[in-house]
Length: 312
Image (cartoon, rainbow, N blue to C red; front, side, top):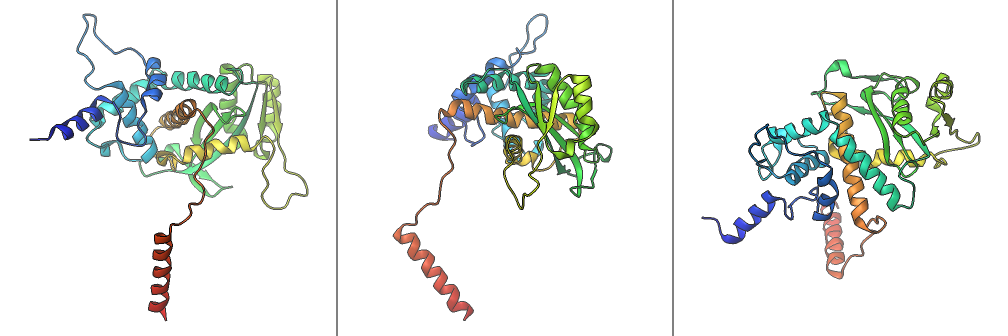
């Protein structure tokens, strides 16, 4: 017979109140996302209530995105994995994930003192390896970066927020794969009239953007006398989102059978980034070096001395 305390902990986890994983949404974060979800599916005469709270479904999706586990390996305190995957597919098919992402993107920009719609953007690509679950027909080999897998094209604003994402085979050249995300940016964000790119996008793409899209694609080139690594003006803002994305283990490589599902996984990761930014209330900080206490310093010195004694 479980104790009352254990029973309360299990009920709170199942009900979505104060979840137990770092990837779970807080109450404040859930209040930002839940109103953007579609209404429950019911028949013409009503229907049975949804068995599992939407909050716990989203927590399960964020758990997969953050930890990189397989759907079948979801912990048992979430809804059954087929149920979670069904919601993931449903919200992908009806563009719910895109609507949530775009709504939060506007809120983050306004919270930062910007207009909801961006006036400029940046484009870049990233080649990632694929898992054995990815069909060979959707992958390729990037000869420049020596990567066999898929290539992610992203267009961001100057804050690093996602405006468009497109996943293709890694064998696709930058100047060819960039056309579709640039077109989507032109249609979804007509106010973005200028886009910066690196030297991999030079050539006929610049003319295509000018003539077909009526936008300005500017190539940010390195200084002729540059030696070693230097942060490039305007370019760093699009490199940072790749670091945000690959911090999610599901995106460290591509596991999805469909490139469209890969794009949805990227949007879920960015949704998590944005809700944390909206509810944090302060700039993000990383913990610096921590000074050792006397006990810890003594333990380290003793371990080093024992190691020297063993190797002597």
